Amino acid sequence: MIDVTLINGQIMSLNDDLIETVQETPDTVISLTTGRKVIVKESRQQIKELVTRARREIHIP
Image 1 (spheres, rainbow, N blue to C red):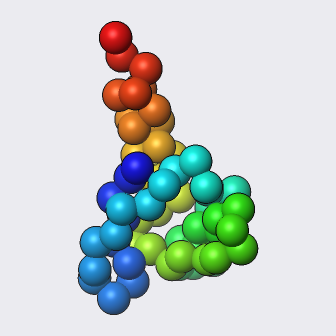
Image 2 (cartoon, rainbow, N blue to C red; image 1 turned 30 degrees about the horizontal axis):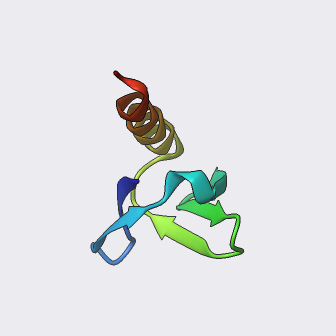
């Protein structure tokens, strides 16, 4: 799970396993495998870093 900031300022925990694509248009739009789209304040690069960090935490013994 990663925490992202919705465009309205609310913080939401998002299951990063459901992320299909991340686009900057100029807002950052996360498309999920469920068909839902989430618009967030974080940049595409920040989302990549959050996902990488979350996955590393899971795999550290």
